[in-house]
Amino acid sequence: MIVFMVLAVAHIVAAMLQRSRKSAELERRWIEEGQPGTWAAYEKEGLAPLERSLRQRLIWGVYAFPAALVGMLAILTNWD
Image (cartoon, rainbow, N blue to C red):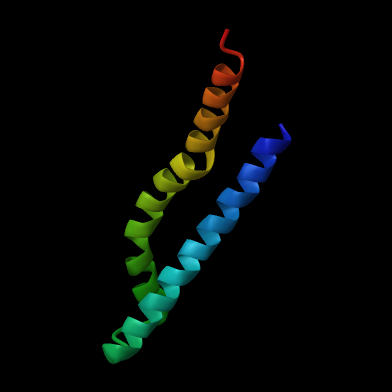
């Protein structure tokens, strides 16, 4: 139970870091392009593809892969 709570925190932190990095990249490009439109609209449009793909990658990377690894280790440890 505690492991999944730790994984949930890791999931949240990873999502925040990824979104922050992408937002900084978008802001740099927005300034280079001469600040077309409003920042909020530009950011929303730029982060939309990230939101769709990031969730699936984080679920696999933070929950599914470690759970499968722990399960595999438990099986291999108890193999007769």
